[in-house]
Amino acid sequence: MKKLIKLFFSIITFGLFGCGGNAQSIKEGELAPDFTLQDENSKSYTLSEFRGKSPVVIFFYPKAGTPGCTKQACGIRDNYDKFQKNGIVVFGISVDSKEAQKKFKDENNLNFPLLSDQDKKVSKAYDVLNNFGISSRVSFVIDKEGKIAHILRDINISQHADQVFELAMKLK
Image (tube, rainbow, N blue to C red; front, side):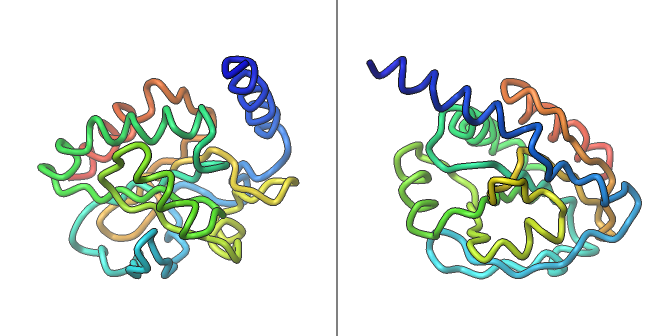
């Protein structure tokens, strides 16, 4: 039964990819839209605070706790040491509440900030909000100047952590 439930959520999540919100209005080379969001512990992060300091990886994901989002986040978790050692900042963002983000983080021992975009303003600014009112799975690699260096729209969640790490390392 548990496998059937996971399969159902995987099919639902997979189906969301074709429902808009694929960052088509955002272009590489543009200044990344600035934002201030809170993490699961109500700590605020402002993107522009990292300008001139480090590359930033932002990955938007549909729903905390779903199988695909869990696999993607755990891939970052398992590789987070190398991001930290190389001064690369990583944020996971979804429209889930801070409480849902905290539960997701605690259940999966995640070691990086999960930001809550519950009012959906950041997802709209990055053009990742889909027709179902949740974020599509899109990642952005932002350079030290705050410009979008890479946009990943077709994400293989098994390879995501390695892929964004390699792209961010090229910006060092």
